[in-house]
Length: 362
Image (tube, rainbow, N blue to C red; front, side):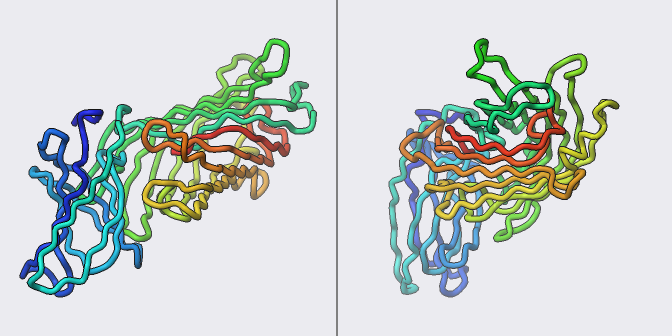
């Protein structure tokens, strides 16, 4: 299914029709989804959320481009998704009608130009920020001061495991790069680059509103160096997420991992990098894929030499006027890191660093 300038959701045509088969007190709501040329769009996932209790219903459009729901009177939010990427979202009200009444309501919903692949998304907070640790030196004798830290983290769904109730389950390939860069030095050398290729299986296994999703994966992490500065290890992990980033006020997840393939001279890396992690998002104004103004994110590594190996706090102030792709919002980024294993090269060092810069949240 091609997504681009030539594709549009007609608005949403919502028909409130009496039906003897419907439960008393509900009305049939039909979403008509079409391309700009009038041809129907099949297999589009429609999510409808009750504003009163947060209950979410889902259905996919049939070959005629229609998805139907039986809804009680009230206010609802909807989102149309194609392979996990949002096409449109909005709200509507189901009025309290007499049995003999019939009402048609047309909502005109603009659709953004979706040129990127629907299977591609960010896998973490991507940022470019600068700060320092008060001029301290690392175990290698290099300075921590005035460093730039940046992260690029992406994922791509290579295999779908979808059903009528799902749009995101599947097998994903991932790649992340986290770098510390001594940009103010005369030759602007990189302090360390950590590369993390991996893959994971993501499942939507439980019903709303808990929105719990288990996942299982493997990841390799190394700094691409040779000789005494070489660092690398592998992890197999299992975890559980809850909520949806950019849609729920609270979301996050926990994971534990089993390390292997650790170099003998660096076998203690798990004592400083931990054997698991927990992360949480607080987005007080998030709704229907929009993060709102504020995102507060915390990530903590656990079960190493100390109960808490390290902790990272990210605060994002979203610049809603600056949009990247279709769903990504640029933000001012503030970060505080405390603990060990911020980078593989100096994983034994403990430090506290504050940074500020720009970020993009998936």
